[in-house]
Length: 565
Image 1 (tube, rainbow, N blue to C red):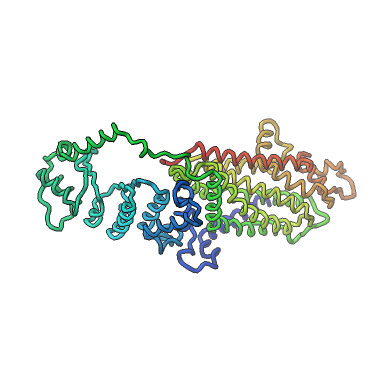
Image 2 (tube, rainbow, N blue to C red; image 1 turned 180 degrees about the horizontal axis):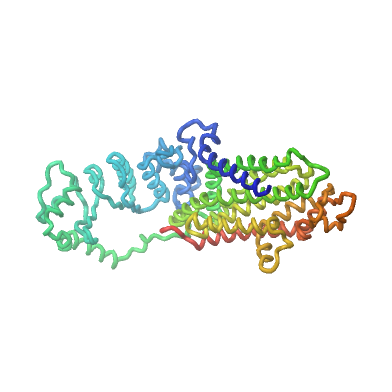
């Protein structure tokens, strides 16, 4: 019966999970009206929020934006958004155009705005126009031109620009295959310096209206016998540049040296504050993760608890009935645990990879992220656990006792948190989701087999004693069972020949029905290993496991890096 119930529940769970994932933006966001806000995407806050987050964490505290004037940082962000021409998009969620977010070109401008929020003196860009059409490329370069006009140096690699785009650059470093310099210097008005240089070295005259960027590449193919790299080394431009570099090396100006008082622009308290705010916002915009967890909690709790609705809280029961209660309680925390750990893995992967980029950019260190991850999960863990516990508790027919209900909720909350936090730990410790799923499967398997039902505690000897005490589910299950049934005096009729029958010293030839209490059956069923007196020990061990999981997650974020940055 237990196997059949387990199979049916898993089948329904799988169906509901995929159904909700596919319908969640529509089904779970009924109050949302616009196309852009209908599709809520993971790790995609709004445009203005993204720029503001970068400014708060990366902008030097000596910058005028952090003076005493209120909201000066917000005004600074507004200037950046205006400079990058993102005013009309500042309220949109970041994402691809197909998903209801930004277009590819808008995303490029947002990426530049995020870097500009740190007020750098120089900005390097790798092919900012690649993948864009001519109009979009022009918009991006116009934004870069505005940055350059503020006194910042902008360096960008670019391939085959249009004449309009090429005209916006002040200087050019042209390299040929192998990295040798072919030209370096100011372009001049309408690229006259570039044109005169190549024409002086035997290049074919440029045609009227011809794109200088295309022309300078074409002449090197036509005049393949001319070594333009050697021409540059012998040119006045090259000699002047070498003299300038030698002068800079000899006459070093310490006053111009860029130094920082600390590794991070913001204090640790500020980093924790802003990271907490950001993750809370992200979690609230994650229907496929959090709202689906809530919905599944409601569905699963009723499905499991309703098995006993037609024989509700009997005063007299047989062994099969009370064993079914024990098994369903076991199944409840195992199924919810599987849901918690499998759903958190892909979410944690995205958060982890974004953190790697933030760390490389000098925005964040590991501690604020590790702390914020735990804090962001807590409200949803409490909501899901509370809804599940209340519905399951009363539909399965447990004692209408407030203290017992609170005890059930407490141990169930521990279970949900442990599975979720260990899922975060696994994803931070290994490179990909597949490897993390293997670790999660091992964790689930240990809890399945060694929590005390499939293999009873009294049958775990030798090596398996260790697995019994290693399994977090053991302490959850012991707490759930003993707090509910340690003083349950309802009658359980013993089955002839069962262990419970023998423990009661019943006689097979007796004319009267042999029976005991639920508390006695619990004692017999678990071989006396599940004790109500262990409940505080169980709480302490579960709390210690949560602390250990958070510490190990912090260490994994600190020591491991699975990105190329």
